[in-house]
Length: 60
Image 1 (cartoon, rainbow, N blue to C red):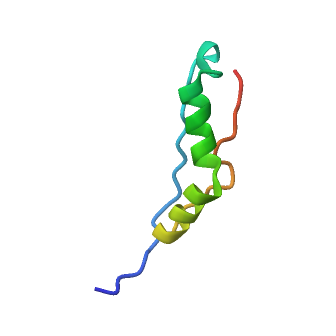
Image 2: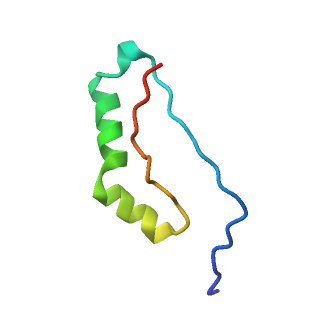
Image 3: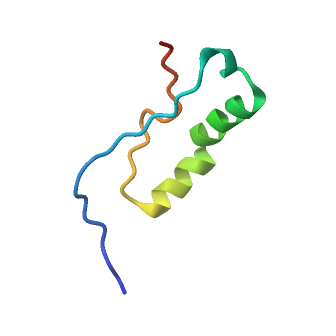
């Protein structure tokens, strides 16, 4: 179909987890995956994704 991506807007999403769980293996593995070059390469294939702050941890 040869369709192009047309950006309509920018959306940001956060993944929130309680401090007591931040060091759980499944949480650290999730963060490692989304910060990996392999994951970013897959996002590049989809086009239109900005992952400059992906995996950034903000403690509240």
